[in-house]
Every structure is written in C-alpha cells, then in structure tokens.
Image 1: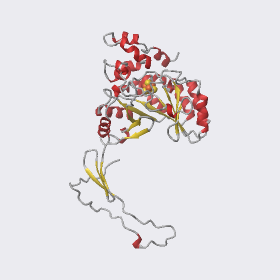
Image 2: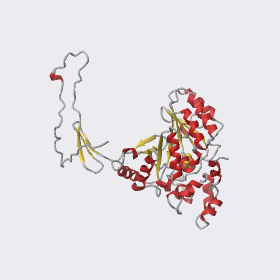
Image 3: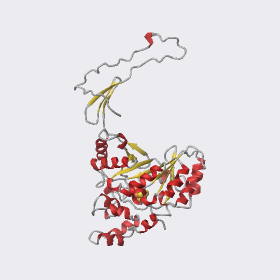
Image 4: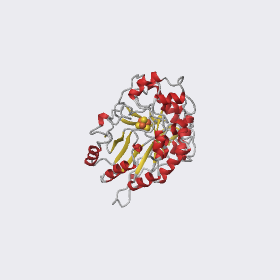
Amino acid sequence: MSDWQKSLHASVDTLDKLEARYGEEVIDVEGLKPAFDNFQMRITPNVLATIKEVGDAMWQQYVPTVAELDVVDGVIDSLDEDGDSPVPNITHRYPDRVLFLVSPICATYCRFCTRRRKVGDPEKIPLNQYDSAFDYIRNHTEIRDVILSGGDPMMLSDRRLEYIFQKLREIPHVEIIRLGSRITSHLPSRITPEFCEMVQKYHPIYMNTHFNHPAELTEETVAALGRLASAGIPLGCQTVLLRGVNDDPLIMKELMQKLLKARVRPYYLYMADQVAGGEHFRTTVEKGLEIIKALRGWTSGLAVPHFVIDAPGGGGKVPLLPEYVEEINEDEVIFRNYEGQRFVYKQPRQVAVPQRGDAVAAESDVVPIQTGKKAAPRKKAVARKRKTGT
Ligand code: SF4
C-alpha cells in the first residue's frame, strides 16, 4: 500500500470515530445520523491536523452539523448540471468545453459541496461508463477543453488517470485537459513523483486547486503544489466564499498571497451555491464585493480572483465587480481608483484612418488627437495622478 493510501485509511470516516476523537459532548451522533443519509463524511489526517479547535474555519468546512438538515430554499442540483448532461458523466454547458466526472469519491468531503447529491456514490458517478463520454467528446469537434472532476479525479490510480489522458489525447480537437482537485490540501502525499513523471507525457494539463483558508497551505501542501508546478502543470485556485470560514477581507488577502507564493494563481472566488443543506454557509453578495474591493489595488493583481456567481439553474458563471465607474459619456469616463480618488479618462477622438492607395490624406480628413488638454472640471475637483503600475 502506498503512503497516500495508508494516510487515507487513517482518516476519520464514521460518526463513531468522530465522537471518539472530539467527545460525545461535541458530536451529536444521533442528531447527525440523517445527515449521513444524504452525504458522506471522511476527514484525512492532513485535514484533521489543521483543525485547531471545535468550530474553527477548518472544522466548519469538514465536520458535519445538524445545520445540514435545515434545507431552506436550496435545491439538490442547484446548477442544473444534470439538465446539461447529454450522456452519463458529461456536462456540456459552455460552447467549447465539457465537464467530465471521472471519480465518485473525494479524500475528504466538504460540507458545502455543490455536487453533494452525487459525490461519494459510485452509482451516480459510474466508473464503468467512460466510453459514451469519450464518444461524445470525439463526436463534438467544438470541444477543445475537458475538465476532469467528480468527486476528485486524483483519487483514481495513476493507471486509470493515464488511461483517461491517453484516450483524450487521441482526440485531435482536445487541446487542453484540466484536473479539478482538492487533493493538495486533503492528501498531499497523493502527488507522487511517479504521477508527476507520468503526467508530463500528456501536456498541456492544468490543475484547478481549491483552497478556502490560509490554514490549508501547510508545509506538506505547499511542497505538493511545488511538485505539480515543477512538473509543468499551471495551477489555478477556486475559492468558495463561506460564512464563518473566509468571509473576511484580511483572511482572504492572506489566502491569496499565500497561494501566489505557493505558485498557484487565484482564479475564481465563488458565491456559495444555493445547494440544499448548505444554507448556513452562504453570505451576502455585498460581502464578496467588499472582499474584492479590499484586494484590488491593495495587493498584486495576480492575487485578485474573478468574483462570480454560478447562476442558479445553469446560467453559467457571471462576474461581479465593485463599482468603480461613476459615469461614461462620449467625451470621457469618470471613475474612482482603489483609494476612492476620482479620475477622468478622455475618450478617443474620431480619426479618419488613411487607406492603402491614398497618396496623401488630405489634411482636412484627419481630426487631430488633442493631447495634454485638461478635462473640463466636473462638479468637484478631479484628482489627477500619474499612472504608476498595472
Ligand atoms: S473536494 Fe470538491 S467534490 Fe469533493 S466534497 Fe469537496 S467540494 Fe465536493
């Protein structure tokens, strides 16, 4: 048995083990039993080590509570992924890419999981129905990007992963393969030298990691990320905005900066989906906008993810931005910078572009661009500042 499999076997994966670890006064075994009918539980030793006290950010992400049974207005398949599923295991929503569910299981199960209706259940994400998925991808030449997900694709053996990579690389129009995986924080030992060597034969392969809190970036995790990056895998990160976990600008800034240091580019910050059983994790949209405003300009642009809502019912990701623009008219754009100062950007003048064959454009055809002219003062004095960076 490999190191990562031994680690997986040492996980807490039953209510009894959870009670034995944290005590009956903390774990309501009877109360939690119905939650287990709906969703799996497993917490690896790596994740357990990041839980410092009952109720902290790491605890909330992984330890089940009776709040999961409190279904307010969430829906089972909140993104209607099944509605866009032409064959088993495939969701085809966007024009040039598909989601390919290849693994039913995860090393650790997150209590807010959008796909909790399926994850943990091999009957709902079957391992023996890949063929129709490959056929679908092969027959749809517009698909240039395949996102392997689940569950966690990194829970498959190297052999099975290599089989999937090989089959996809036989399809000429598949340009890139992405792995959506939380394994680097749940089970960093899964990133073995053997996997890193094998994967390099099938590039370009990207990995979208998933981190929600700076405490997840342990020494082992950072080392695993380093191994992936050194194997030539560009690393991005998806983060979910979660009440009581990371709904704080300072926590989010620390997370984004730590990710960059670990060679991971923050990619998306998601509003938590309206999934049944996840209501207690949801924040307001204003909280997300406040966080983005606290990042943009105050730290490197590389550390600022796209803030999105995955539209309920299957509308896809919609970006959200704090308000910076105050006015746009045909002469100018008036906006505020990250410090709240107002600036004016002049719109371009219409210029007649000389056509090939015109000997010399008549002087009267060209309206000169006036440079260095001061904008007419607005109601308030407009602060001017030299642009100093990107
Ligand atoms: S790792 Fe991803 S798929 Fe698995 S439980 Fe967590 S959020 Fe869901």
